[in-house]
Amino acid sequence: MINSITDFKNVFFIGIAGTGMSAIAQYLAGAGYNVSGSDRYFQPGEKNDTKEKLEAEGIRCFLQDGSGITEATELVVVSTAIEDTVLEVQKAKQLNIPIIKRSALLALIAKSKKTIAVGGTSGKSTTTGMLFQILEYAGLQPSIISGAGLVHIIKEGKIGNAKKDDGDWLVIEADESDGSIIAYEPEIGLLLNIDKDHKEIDELMKVFEVFRNNTEGLFIVNQSHGLAKRLSKDSKHDFSIDENSGAGFIAKNFKQEGLRISFTINDVPFSLNQVGKHSMENALAATTVANQIGVDLSVCAAALHQYEGIYRRHQVFGNKHGVWLIDDYAHNPAKCAASIQACQYIAPKVIAWFQPHGYAPTRFLHKDFVEEIATVLRPADEIWMSEIFYAGGTATKDISARDLINDLKSMNKAAFFADNRNTFLEEVRSHFTDDCVLLLMGARDPSLEQFAKKVWAEL
Image 1 (tube, rainbow, N blue to C red):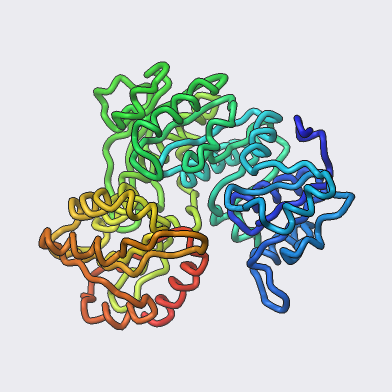
Image 2 (cartoon, rainbow, N blue to C red):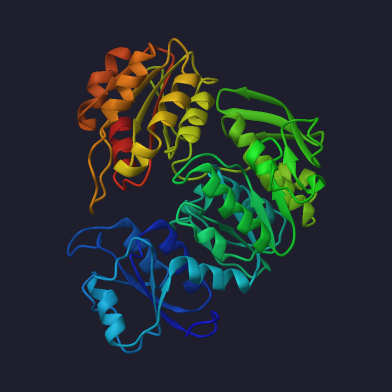
């Protein structure tokens, strides 16, 4: 039985290339553990960037054939995507090796540190990255376990979603989509927002209420968000973009000029190389936490002035022939709408392309996608979609991205279906102007990074 991170030394991850799994693997390797793992994306003779970066951290990588699990293995870690029928799970059971879910292991790690857990349906990765950057800049030597890579860590040749340092604080991204957020008992809990995503609102409210009750110290919420506000413990610890909210930390005077935003927090000026009001809210959330653990607001502002962003979160490729190319991880209705709105400050026309992921999520959020996207589109803007990404497994394929496009068309929106995303650029090229944004949106599909690079190369 594993009750503490001191109960094992040799650990094996099944599905180690996944963002959540690789982050914990790197953290443990940085803490001196013997870490190894396998993934179905590791194939003989094929180059794999994630595998190479893990191996550079001293993590041994194997094919998903069971060869990496031996009698010396003391713990096997699986994600919610790994089923009991997987060969390596069966081998671990045969060898009586304890098997633990990723979220349970992260909960054990969180108990070993002074942990700040960042929750909410949107903005978790960005806020986690911003908070980590502030604490690091302030000299607190924090650690991070996140769902996305920080650009400044990626530039060091790493995956960028984890770092182990010697300070007391650990910043983690707490995921509500699989319910794992309820496993954590953080020192500080941060709730950004609550929107329909993966679960109905009533169910989400119950999950985030448990998150609040499990938080041992400060619980900080976004007073600007009606549902999050309901879970507030004390408004003076909270943040808001509404100066009449009574929150202790207020952001106002928002201004966006191209790819840069400026605003004030409690009258201290901030300036970031980011886009959109949602970026201001994320920066406000991170600053609210940092200030309440002793970091001066001016230090927060200086740290965020240097913030380089998160991988695939409004990642700006550049401008060719008057067309800005931006790649974003947006994948639920609120995120897609916010992503489009953020780009509207950059150019008079935004052409947004979106690849929904999963038939069940798309079916569940069908109406919300249509309503949210329709609300933000200006007359000159366009929305394009390609077919739903299918990751495998059992799925009822009774919905198409074309259904969403047809609904948007019926609302007199400029909506287009590109059945084959590989021909999308040629189809959309005639819609470009000499001053527009081409925004790519989607998640879960590991080939989206290469798709964006291909579009940029051929733009």
